[in-house]
Image (tube, rainbow, N blue to C red; front, side, top):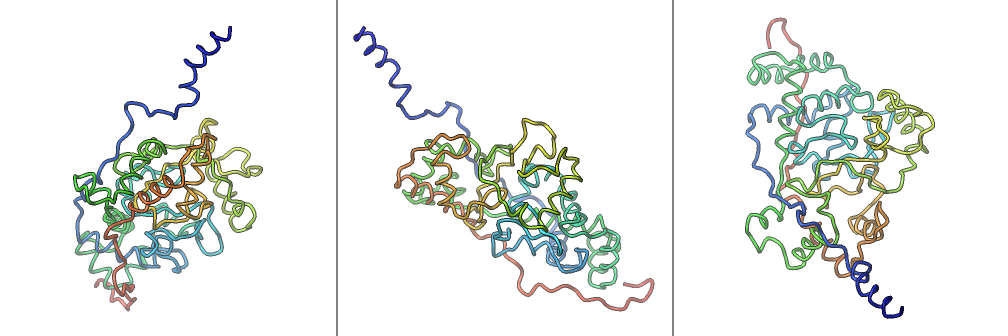
Amino acid sequence: MKTFHLLLLSVVAPFLFAPPKLVADQPVLSPLPPPLDLDADRVALGEKLFFDTRLSGDTTLSCASCHIPSKGWADGLPLSDGYPGSLYFRNTPTLVNSSYQQFAYWDGRLNFNDLQTVVRDHIAEAHFFQADGRLVSERLRQVPEYEATFQEVFHSEPQYGGILKAVAAFVQSLRAESALDRYLLGDSSALTPQEVAGLSLFSGKARCVSCHNGDLLSDESFHLSGVSSNEDIWRVPERHITWRRFMRTLGVPDFVSLRTDEGLYFVTKEDSDRGLFRTPSLRGIPSTAPYFHNGTVSTLEDVISFYNEGGHDGVPLGLSSTEVGELLAFLESLAFENPPKAPPKMTSPTYEIRILGEF
């Protein structure tokens, strides 16, 4: 019997104690796609509108209020501020390279392939800009510079459709590569030996690539993050009010008693989607802290620690302190190279008295 037990242990032990192996068809990383072919005049007009507060209901907010160039085109806050008098309940993602992604928002409720609708949602949504398209268009008609520019770009006076197209074009122009792109294209010196070791961990032992793959370092799918809840959503009245109004608008059942953000479930109402959130792109990640949909993880070191200790599935990665440093070095190498910057001295065109029939 003893011999049998030893024989059985010799057969089973490798499966019990060996590190997990990756599947053969492990997802791969890809360089960023080429820049989109965009109309330069439309992009220039969209840039001006992006920084203009006239697009918001009370003229205090611009797109750049939450998507701040110096903060990686995010805002550096755990949870977004939102429209004055209210506070939002999710973290603000970067807009850089967003034109290549499929879904907008953490719950994927809109599609980035229709970026004009995403822009319209930001202008019209009560907790973002709370503005009426007719009002915004009329404001721009009172500005001779806008009147002339819209005639040049769209051959019409300022209209809501043109506003959406111009802002969408500017967002599509926000593109930045990283050292990883040069490395993937054959420049072996683009990453340091430590960063290359981190890339190996990213694609292997750390299992990051199972969700963060492709050209965006995102599988464009939805997963259970497992991070703790941000209690400010229910502790701070302005956020709680926003939460309840938003859930009611989406038709979420029993939203009054909910005390967790269920992500994709709020859109699909499918129980299997509870707690699932869009996999964010890791491009530019050193600039976009804090992390996850609710900003509850402050640093990249904390993100690695979260997953190394078991993450959402309770299975530790078993990374040594040296390996943690290598993985961190690789993630930091994903910083935007030559990121798009705010234009110098961007000022909004001024209102002027108009003569009827002229611009």
